[in-house]
Image (tube, rainbow, N blue to C red; front, side, top):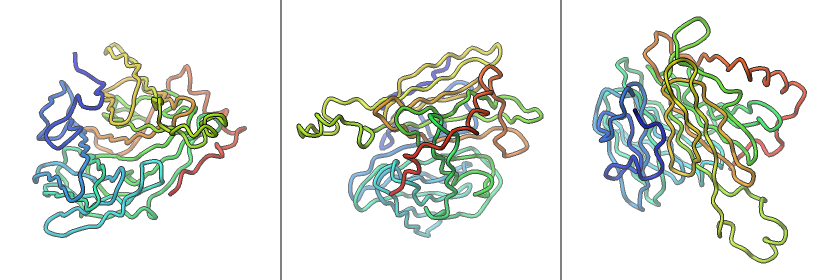
Length: 307
């Protein structure tokens, strides 16, 4: 049975804290073919590199600023203080191109990838160009950065975005699937790379007055759910923290839950073998009605998260 949950450190390789699904990944996940992710934490002045391969890639700063060299051309990614500080510059590299990523001040960077053949040009997507969507309403409100979706980026196979869910809210909800090629649905593998934090203002007045450190004795945590949509077995109910990864090969997935007191972030990487690069989903029929309730609710006033 393949493993679908990878806590921080369980999918590390060399300089990479996470290395799953890439052509050079040590971990071979049974049946996993269409998506990959790498995450590295760089000390000041350090760098990581990826050789040319039949993969398209997008470089996503998680915290810190970076330079990425592709085909001898250097691109500056202005980055951000954290994944909760609004969009970052990102860099689409295209297919068959070596990449070197460096940081003068240090920081953490992700590379989303997918096996691909059709070439598209390298493109730097600035933070201010990133479509920011506020999705859902009420306690299903979340913020989506759509820098790698078909409407925003020319690419061969993958669809990449990131989602921020305020403390106490649910996202990836109602539960949905994209595991068949049929009318109204596309087959897409999906990766969730998670980060969590203590939500600003979540400390009680007593704790704040006592001068208690924001992170002292705290354990920022979220939860992720994946379950079977047909006779293929899958049953994930995972506690997730910064650096953890959940793979969704098929099945209903959602909710991704931000526990009270803790904000939740995830980077989504999706791709599949289908003819169309499009995110078409089916809702779990037991829960799809939830969407209709959003019309009578306001979007969470904590959104949008910005720098």
